[in-house]
Image (cartoon, rainbow, N blue to C red; front, side):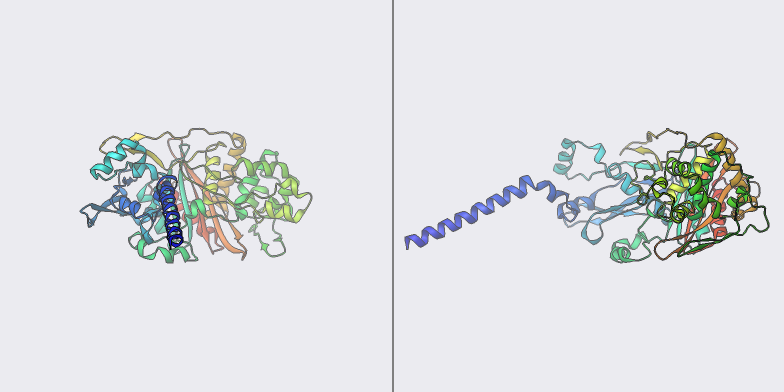
Length: 477
C-alpha cells in the first residue's frame, strides 16, 4: 500500500513539474511568440480598438481611414478600416481582421504599417501606460503623391482589360498613379478573402510591383540603347526586318508597312529581328544595358518590398547559341520584368539617361498634430546611359508615336514619346501588350508611364491607354 502511494505521489510530482515547466516556458521564453501570433485573442482585441492613421492623396482626399464600429462587450470602442475610394486600392493595399487573423498586405498599408499603427511613436513606458488606462493606440497619417482623379481616369481607360498602369513624375520619382486589374471590393473583403486567395485571376496581387511578365519587344528600348552606345546609327539599314522571327514554339512577325528597313523604323514598328540579332552581335553592350536599366534586380520604390523574376544567365554565358541569344534579345527568353521596372526604363530616358528613384509617400502627420512632416526622399540619380544616347532614344520613341505601333498614344497639343509592343508570356505563351512612354512638361520635368495588358495581342490598345494616362496627368481634356 505504501509503495503504491509513493508511486502515485511521484507521478503527481512529475506531472506538476511538467506543468510548471510548461507554464514557465510559455510565459517567459515563448511569450513573445504567443503575443506575436495574429490569431492571439489579445492581439485581435488590441487590433479591434487600434486607431490606425488615415491615408490621403496629394490633394487631401481620404483614401483610407479608421471609423467606429460599435462597442465590445467590455465597453471598448471598436474600430474598422474604411476605404472610401476603391480606385486607389492597388496603391493602398489592405488591412483587415478577416478569418480571425490580422492581415496587412500590399501597398501603403504594408509599407508604412509601423507608422500607421503608431508603433514608431511609442516607447515601452507609453505602451504600458496605454494598457493600464485602456487607451487605444493611435497611429500617424500618411500623405501620398498619388493623384486620385488621375487614378480614376486610368480606371476608366482600362475598362475590361486585366493588367496594370503606373505613372511617375520625372525627375522627382513621385508616383502619381498605380492601378492593377482585377481588384476586389474592400467592403466585402472579410467575407470573401478565402475565395479571393483561390481566385486564378489573382485579384489580391498588385501587378505593378508583383506581376512578372516576358518583356517581349518592350525590351527593344533597352537593346536599342546598347546599339546606340555601340555607335550604330538610327538610320542604318537592318537585314530581314520584315522576316518573321521564328523559334521552336512561337513566331514573332513584323510589318514595316512600306517603310524603309532602318533600325529606327524597325523599333517604331515593333520588329524583333534586328534586336534578336543584337544580342548575338553586341552581347556585351546588351547585357550591360539590361543590368544598367535595373532589369535584373528588384526596383527601388521607397519603403516597398518589390520583386523581379529570377535573373537569367548572362548573354556572355550562352556561348554562340543563336537561338538562346535571339530569344533573350527579343525579350522572349528567361528574363521577366514588372511594370514598375519598365516605368523606370521610360523615366530614365525621359530623365536624359539618369536613373530615377521612386516614392509614393512624401509626408507623415503624428497623432494630434496639424502639420505634415516631410519624408526623406532619395535623390540619387546615377547615369544609366549617356545623354546623347538618351536623346537618340527620344527620337526613336517619338517616331514610334507619330508613325509606328504606338500611334494611338498621340494626342493633340502634346509631344508624347513611346513604344508599343507585345510579348508571349508564361508557359502557355499568352499574349500581352506593352506601352512605355513619357511626355515633357513646360517646366522642364516629364511624366512617364508603363502599361501592360494581359491576354491581348494589341499594342495599339496599350498605347491608347498610355496616351490617355499621360494626357490626364497634364490636365488636358
